[in-house]
Amino acid sequence: MLCNTCDTNKTENDFKRYPSGNLAKRCKSCDYVAYCKQGSCKDCGAQIRQRAIRCKPCQGKVNRGENHPLWQGGRKVNSDGYVLIGNNYGHPNANLQGYVLEHVLVMANHIARPLVDGENVHHKNGNRADNRIENLELWNSKQPKGQRVEDKVAWAIEMLKLYRPEVLNG
Image (cartoon, rainbow, N blue to C red; front, side, top):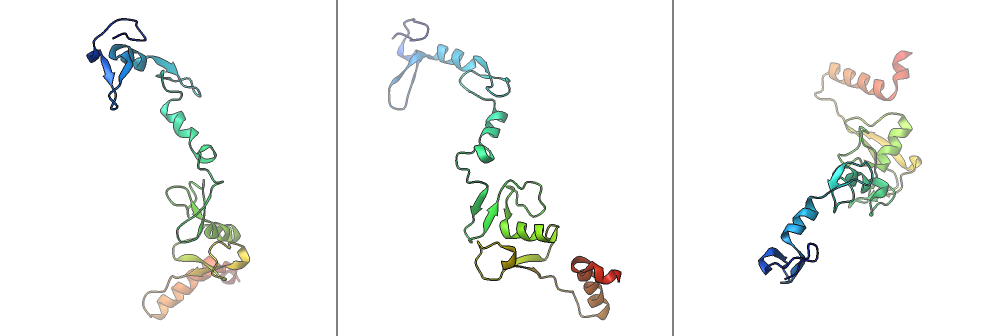
């Protein structure tokens, strides 16, 4: 059998056999040489296999964010009906994929700080996709432990520091 690359006659065992039963057009030796040939990355110029267009780091950048074929502007709706906003890596309220719930982001921007433990945002009209600030309320679910007066006073001061610091200064 004749190899299309090196133009030499070889046995069938010298050619790769595909699952369909067909034999490859070039012999295993020529296939290996072609696989091992070096090329350069289209983006950064790093040495790569000739068959590849980009090195792995550059390929990873190509399919991220706006360049991803399934990109929808960084917004998506989860199974509970909440809108998520992407590309918020480093935001204290972001998940591991860099998404923040839109109502949390709107409230955090409104109060000029990220939400802290025990805080959550409530939709007044019940529509989880309606994230206008006038439809949102900041709730705090923290409760003081115990019933001692000292505990309640400490808790009250903590709440005032967080939500109404000007009251303590006056």
